[in-house]
Structures are given as C-alpha cells and as structure tokens.
Length: 413
Image (cartoon, rainbow, N blue to C red; front, side, top):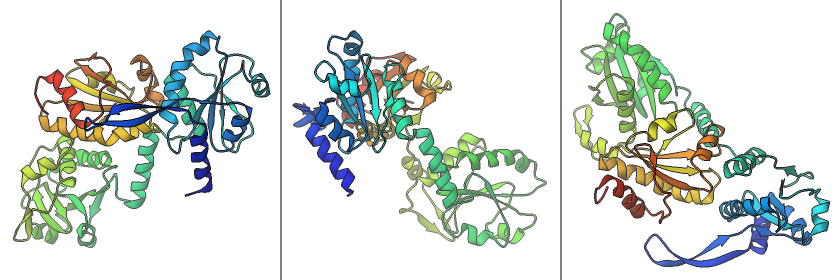
C-alpha cells in the first residue's frame, strides 16, 4: 500500500464530515451507514487537503441564489465521490467567512468551481453548465477517467494481443489444423469452393468473426475440404458446408441451426458459457445436452447509447435502465446485482430488458439530461416507452425483482 494512498485516506478521515443514520440492509436488518457531505475548508485545511489528492472546490456565498440552486447537486456529487480512496474529493469554501482564501484563488463571482489536481500548481476552472452530466464529464476529461467505450476498446486491444486470431476467420491447412484446434474452443466451417451454400455463408462467417472480437475464448475457422480431404474425412464431413464445434481437439457437436448472423452468434455465446463437467463420452465425440447449454446461457446487461439505440430499446415492452458513471462507488457496488437481475429476468421468459447507460460517455450526455438524471446510479423503468417514477427502494436482488414483477403481473421472475 503506497504512502500517498495512506495519506489520502487519513486526509479523508480528518476532513470529510458525515452523518450516521440507520437503514435496512439487503436482509431487512438495520445497519449503520454514513452519508458523505462536501468537505468544508478553511485556509489551513485547504492547503493540507490539496497536498493529498485531487480536490474539486466550490467557492460560494450563502446569500447567492445560483449557489443555493447548485447546493443539492454539489452534495449529491460529494455523496458519490467522497468514498474510501476517492479519485477526487468534493469540497467547498464559504467566501463570506474566508475572504482572504477566496481572493488568493482569484474568486470574483459566485459560485466559482475549481479543480485542483495533485502535483499541479494551477487549478482548472469549470466553465460548463451546472448539471451532473456536464460536471462529471469535466471530471473524467481532466482526470483522464476512461469511459466504458474506451474500456471496451482497451479490452479489444488486449484480446487481440493475447489471441492474434480474434476478429478474423482463420484459414486452416493440413499443416496447421491439428495444432490450431488442439486446445480451446473452435467453430470450424468445412467447405468446398464450388458449393453455392458455402458461398452464401462466406460473408456471414467473416462477419461472425468480427462480431465476436470481444469473445476471446473462441476462434472462427474454415478449411477447404477439396484441398485437405483427409482431415475432413477424419471429422466425418459428408456435406458442405459442415459447421463443427471443436473443444481441445475433440468434436463436440455438429451445428444444425439457422445460418444467419444473430443465430450463429447466439450459438457461440451459448457454447462458450456452457459447463462441460457432465458431458457423456460417445466414441471420439462428446454429446452435450442442449438443455444444459441453454441453462448456461445468460442474458447480459445491454449497454445503450445515444445513437438511437436507447429510444428504440425502450419503445416497447419493459426496460429497466441503470444510469451510471464508471467511477461511482455506488454504481460499482450495484453492478454484480444488476447482472444477476439480467440473468433472472431472462429466465422468466418475459422479454424484459435490463440495460445501462454510461452518462460520462459524450454520446450519452443528452440522454441523461433528457431523462433528468441528477445522481448516480439512477434507476428508471420504462414500459412501452413511458418512464415510470424513479426506483428508490433497496438495491438487493429480491427487491429489484419484486419491483419489475409489479409491471408484468407475475409473482416471481
């Protein structure tokens, strides 16, 4: 544990005011919790705090109307950010009490918002609109907090470095086939160039590889049976195209579903997520119960964005949306429960969509403003495009399930 981290924790414990209150935990029992407020600073505390980390300060006057309107949002921001090991500390200075401090920092109007970055002499003045999306976007840009889109891009880059075949169809030969399929998961197309069905499938097969760029646990391959007949005979290929799922060198099953992109992609996701512990060995192949594989498939939380996807998704049916920021501690705590909720609603067969919107992403800023998102996480349920009242109940899985059930008329998911 670094010295800077210990100093920051000590500073937070020293400066952060909090109030204890009692709330019910996920089991319905009472527990103590603390609500964090913006740190009130004087000259001495100010100098000490900015030596320990990043500090975002509101310089204000109690009589100022603009300051009064900003106050609730500033406290919401403090509740989100002023947690253990904060990326930035939210603070405030009353300029009617500390005129010298405000003059020193060139405060000429109220409220003035300045970000003090660790190790930098000059502060950065916030000049945007005083709403949560604009302020959090400013924090992300100044402190280089990656958005979810940037994190996904980094994952794709890491995946491509780990597996150079990710995102493209691997063309196999007699020399490379055995080694390639000897370990891991492989979806292989056995084909003949003259086969018209193979020709129609070819562009979809290429697109499938591109679509699965984030699925590092599988490669999409093909082999020309007119050139490498012995391999195709070994795998009992009797027609073209034949699509086989191969794991660790062994044929698992022959794919017999539709050959459209969505169905093929769903099949791969199902196979990658399926448990292999209960397979029955039958000769050289392993027959896997399809019901077990379907049970293993989980519906992931859908990421929505401002390119029309959001409006299209909420237009019909039930959509439960989490508006969040990647750096928000409460959002991070909710994340695994939100994933569990997606799995549970998928099992209900009701077609419910569990989704999320990253309000720090530039393309989502207007969505979060339009939906009146004022803090993170904000949970809104939409039924046939109509937004319901904000969900403010317990964030436990049973309570979230019960809330969704009210809109579908069933007792349980």
